[in-house]
Image (cartoon, rainbow, N blue to C red; front, side, top):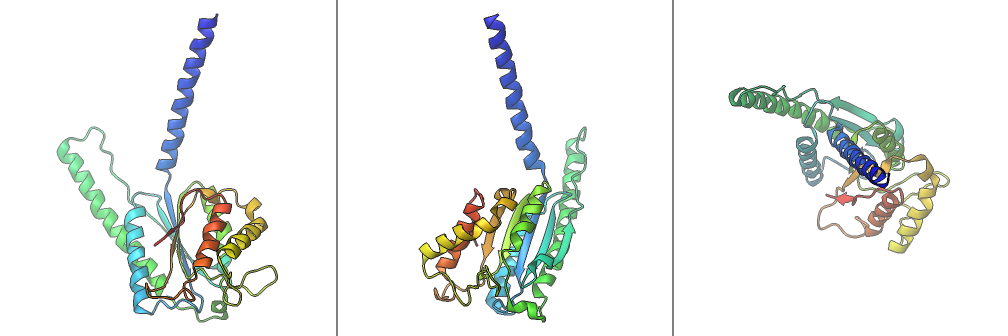
Length: 258
């Protein structure tokens, strides 16, 4: 009887391990959604040569890296006073690798070549449409405020839909909302790193319980500042604020600044 119990436990363990591998494979096979949040507030001017070139390179690179198969998509949102209603573009990849089962070496190579040509054409369309949004100017009064907090539930919802989510902020990350219980870093930025950490821990309590999926997103921040920018322009404490906020939200991966 004892041997039978041990045997059943061994079989159960094997099945559990198999189930785990399948789950990991499902995550790997999930389509990628690349979310680009473009700052359209008055503090970011993409007409400046340095900013334009930096953001163009990042867009070209992310399309090359993340648009690889049918179902991969890019969503573009504008950051301003009404970020929650700022969706500007949604584009989904239609290219898929042909069936290579039973194909000989020559046919298999032809299928791969066809895929490569198709995906490159589609990536070119992605780049063109995203860069068009980058150049879009915001002439409305919404440019006078910057609601970055509003991006958080948008990200959370997309992760909940089963996508492998990559988030790119093309922004100076200066939250600026003139309303009760909001932050306006233009008027009152954190004085130091300790203040930044304290504010992040305080602010996250406002929405942490409603953001149960965002922890699985990967976050990239691309600021518009040149290497010679002063700490007054590119505040290290504001960077600490966002790093801490995402950490408090449970984002396990490092928030990467490009």
